[in-house]
Length: 81
Image (cartoon, rainbow, N blue to C red):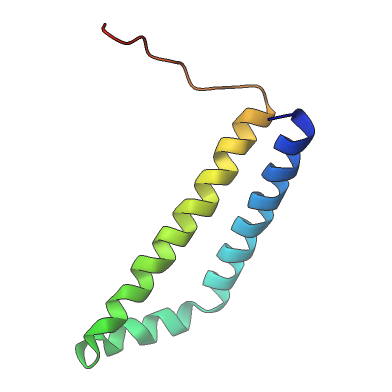
């Protein structure tokens, strides 16, 4: 990936991560209500699971692009060692 694309992707995923954290903190009381109502409606347990997957995707992509924009890459392991 070119340096400009890497920085653009870093900013995009970083902004998305920041927006997700802001939404989570501003709507924390809603998550508490859902947690309290899981006894009546068991399907509500899926909401925090989906939120965790979304956070994981965006924060992971941000982190990967961030390190790539700094020029750091994961070490490649040799096969057969």
